[in-house]
Structure formats: C-alpha cells, structure tokens
Image 1 (cartoon, rainbow, N blue to C red):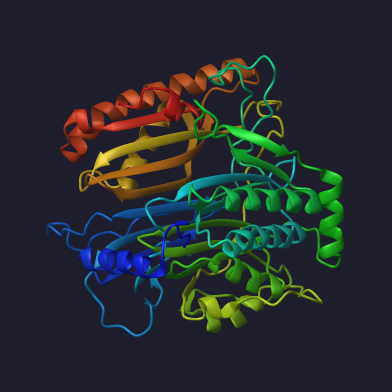
Image 2: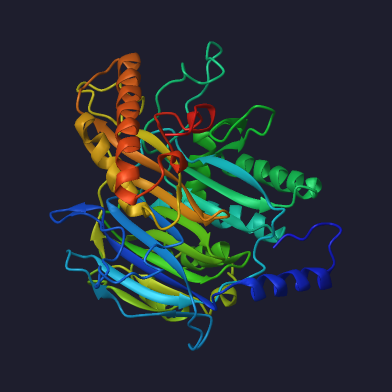
Length: 511
C-alpha cells in the first residue's frame, strides 16, 4: 500500500477500520476452474452451473470475474462477498471437483481480504515489456528468463510499496508507428494476436512523483541490463489506454546473451506439457515477486501468467512448463503453499546452481490449486501479420462494456460476443477478460478475443476492413440482444467492440 505524503499511520489505520466496518461481508467466496481451452467437449466452462436454477440467489452473479487462456490451457475465477468467517487461517480452499469435462476441475474457497490494500488516490502506471521479436512459442530457458523478469519487475514495485494491479503475459505486440500514421491510429499496421510480451500495471500515489520517477528509472536500468524492450503508457494530453511511449527497443543480442549466461544448462526445447497453478491469498505488496521467485529458485519457469486482485484478494494464475522427461502423472491437487512447493518442484527438469533467496514467508498462509498436467498448444503466427501464403492468421479484437449488476453476467456476455462474431470468423476465442462491480451498481469489464476470419486475405487493408465490418456488425447484434437477454433498459447498455484497443476510448461507447 502506498501512503500519501501527508498521511499519518493513525489516520490510515482509521480509514482502514472505517472501510472494514462499512462492508457487509466478512470474507470473499471464490471459485476457480482449470482445464484445456478447447477440447472435444468444447471450450472451458467459464462459470459453475447453479445446481438450483429456479432459486433466486442474490449472489448468483459474481461481483468480479477473470478469464485467461494461453498455450491451450484456461483458467476462470469468480468472486462474491460472503458472510462466512468460521474457518482457520486467512484462506480456505476445497478439494478439486470434477466438472465432467476432461482434465477440467473446479476449486472453491473463502479468503479474508486485506481492507487497506489500495487507497482511492492510487494512480495506475502501465508498462509493456517486449521479450522477443518472433512468434510466441517459448522454450524452457525462455520460461525461466520470463520468471526472472516478472520477479524483478514486481520486486521493484514492492520495494516502493506499490501494489501490482494486474500482470498479463503473453499479450499482443505493439507495432512500431510510422511517420505517416494518423493520430487515431487508423493507418497503423495490424497486430498479431499473441507475442512474447508482458503487460503489467502498478498503483502509485499521484503526489509521489519522485517515487514514480525512481521506479521508471530502475525499469530502464533493468531493460538495459537484460535487453528487453520497454514501453510506458502515454499519459500526455489527449492520449488513451493502448497508446505507448517507447523507452527502449528490444535488443535481441543482449537478451540472448543474458538468457544464456543465467540459464546455460536449461534446454531450448518448447514444452509439450504444462499445468496451471492458482495461488490465492489476501492482497499484499510483494506477493507476486515472492511466489515467482520461489518457483524460479526451484528451476520452474513461467510460460504464461495472469495476476490480479479482486475484492482485495490476489489471484496469481501461472501456466508452468512440465519437464518432458518427468514421469509423474501430476494429478490435480489443492492445499497450502508450502505443501505445494515440493509437488511443483517435481515438474522442473533443472534447478539453478545458485538462486536468490525468496521471501516465501510472505505467502506462507496462502493456498494453491493445481491442475493436472495437460498438453500445450501454441497459436500460429505470421511474424508480420497477414504475410502468410494462406492468410489464415489470428487477429486480436478488444471489448469494453458497462452493464447494470445482476442483469447479464460476464460469461454469458462473452458467449453472446462469440456468437455475434461467428458469421464472420472460423474461430473465436477469449484470450483474456476481466470485470468488476463498480460504484453505481454497474459492472465494467474489458476483454481481448482472438479471431480467425472466415475470408482469407493477405492484404493488410482488406483484412482491416473485414475486421472493422465484423466488429461493427457484431456490436449491432449485441445492441439488439442484450436488453432482451438481461431485461435491461437499452439506454443503460454501454459496449464497444473494436479491432484497435485505442478505439475503445476514441469511439462512441454507447451500444
């Protein structure tokens, strides 16, 4: 937690006490689902089915929701307020429950949130890291390098008391702008759906400009040391989310040398099996660095990650590579963090000779849900989007919405979006989605979808027109469907679907 410069410890404690007294829940109820992103049984179910659909449960709609998919594996997390407080420790998690779908299991539990985690004056600082300039298909060595960089980045934030608001990898790479680009980005090159990039945001008090400058200076020093590319969110006047200010470009040779020097004996093979680890606990600064650092010290890299705090409870969702020579079946499991480490260590084929000590005590009381080991798949990529012989290239589409609470939940909305895009696409997958209950009893959310168009084109301008036409048509269909689906006043529906992230803000958002 970052305190304002004029704040005192007593006033901050009083604020936390008032916030805790004003809430109607003693704990947070959560549900986590692990499984293959797509299989013979269809896509991963994003929410648990209500066993009694006729019962009107006021908590039937999650207040917060997160979905993440990478390397052919998916995880969905839902949270609700709960009055339950009679459980030992800060977190409780149940045994894995089979959903009836192959390798897909659900985990339910409760957590006591940290009421003073983030204060209202927090300002977001968003960072985009580039870890390569080819398509996304990481090796064991690259997974360990990514774990090291996640640990270093989040450690910098922890040293300054800045909370990690979210961290996500892989993400869509940002094309280099050209001098002829228009201000609204309409002439910018198309983006690959997935690239070797990492995107994260921290919270920082706007009055502590020196702390922010110090953080950004240390970031630039890390980029210089390891060779990764660094962009910061462009906060100049009339700039919006999705516009970046380049600090340093990706240095392939320096990055390669650093990776080889740090992990010389780790194989450069692409993992064929992976497992999902969801680490859950009350939000505290430094927890991400502690969790990832403990894994890296045991030779476990990170293929993909989605880390976020929901209702002041942190969910660290990691896709971890499984050593190809490992013979253990790695079944699904749930339990304490310290008990999970020996199990996770079995999936590593190499342990570094010397590793920094990690602060495992910071998350010693957290709980972990582990999926079974599953087969990995990696998305095809054009390297330069659209430049393939067939034109069958996946593209990203972004979604922003605001709906009244308890009308249409996020999984149902995402299913409607996929159905609306179906006439225009061969395939449509949800790569990332998150929604939160906000003031005014409304749910706001953002998502990135990956689509493969029905029509195959190698011409960038033609593909851009197809994407724009598809999103416009899908948005029109959603405008017609949502009011009837959730019984909503059409004037209260706000939604925008766009092939360019920055247009979510530039364009009119009312559906």
